[in-house]
Length: 560
Image 1 (cartoon, rainbow, N blue to C red):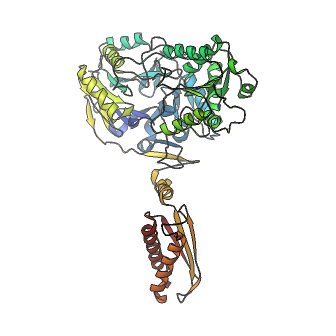
Image 2 (image 1 turned 90 degrees about the horizontal axis):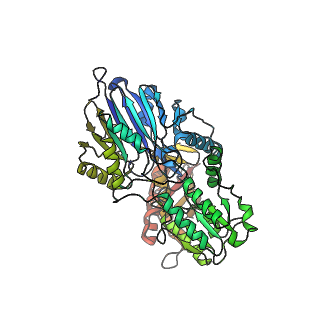
Image 3 (image 1 turned 135 degrees about the horizontal axis):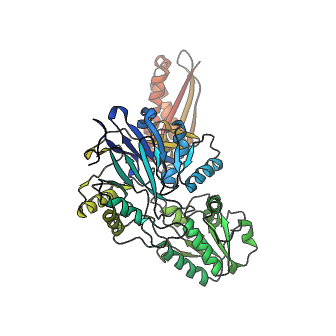
């Protein structure tokens, strides 16, 4: 066991996000006695608001626990620049005023995000090189290259005087990746061969799938065949961050004597950063969308955003005919080289249906292998276990089913200690493994327009109620004697106009108000709060009886 420098020294791991859900990854490593522990943060990501969160763009982990420890936070290390790992940095991290350590591509992505989103706050970024250890407080960190679906993805070897950990980040073993280096198997084997105890914090996304994740090269071969045999225009929608896929499309287009047109800011941003960093050597420059109209139909391949059904992305606008310069004709082909993130399936299907109505041929992952995951399946997990020989395994990056699947698999493979944890749990890694459930307060924050707020502050619950039942507003004026001097005025928003007997709901509400006015003595109306509540209850009850739903009812009784 690694030597401890002093009594009470330990190394712990605490996830604030990403363990129990896919997205908003944020993990903390602590070293030292509990009273004076240094904290190193790994990743700071987001997930995306869905229909159940009206008006909410992004969801991110609440760093409340870290705010209480701010003097002991030493920095943040970024594994890679996917939104679920880096998307919250510019929203959360400036308040900590501590450095961010990132690879060249991650640093460039942060800079581009800040410029694109007009973010005022900035963070200090220090660039690391894979294979070159660097120190952050009492921690020594080494980035290890791994294959994934975005350039410069890295696992991290994190060492403290108490012990050492491999934090995999997102990874897979791809023997022939496109646009990125292969996973550094040699380095993993070296780490596992030196005999020191090791904890492994490992990606669980595909832990329920047998075998190996297919290679990006296989996708490239299939895209090449589809583009070569197409008779008319070809459009391919992708995750914009998937540079390897972008390169495969460009190579396939060149072999078919076609030119690549790019549509969507994200595609241009990723391609621009990659070219600046020398990651697209030999790939011809992409043409802007204005070139689409004058190229012959059999000489163009379009790369565009919108793989997740985003309403304002290029593919959605093309499908509904609102794109300013791009349209499809019958016989064109649209390739969806991606998978729909859970919750986005209907939006993607709606776009595909619109394209089918235009006479466009649709190709998805159901038809051809045109997308592969960037995460390891079970055989790849087993290989990593064999290389590293960990004493302790902690599955992360997944929902409950994924985490439990890897935990069970790790035990089957003979790993001595396996903990299945959730956000807010604290795991003592060294000197002795120990799992403390719910040790740390966790939560989420919403990005609501320009505001960062808690769920309670956002009033999203009321927005859902508004979407379900609408709102009825009643306003009237009483004098000091309790006599009605104006109103009642009613405004019903989001309610149907008529009910079964063709009576307007506004008439139902008005009748309920008049009934309360009639039954409520004038002397008691001077208590405007009680009078308003009586009207609110009556209106809500009568509207529910007539309509079958309870809208939000707001009553304003003004006294003069």
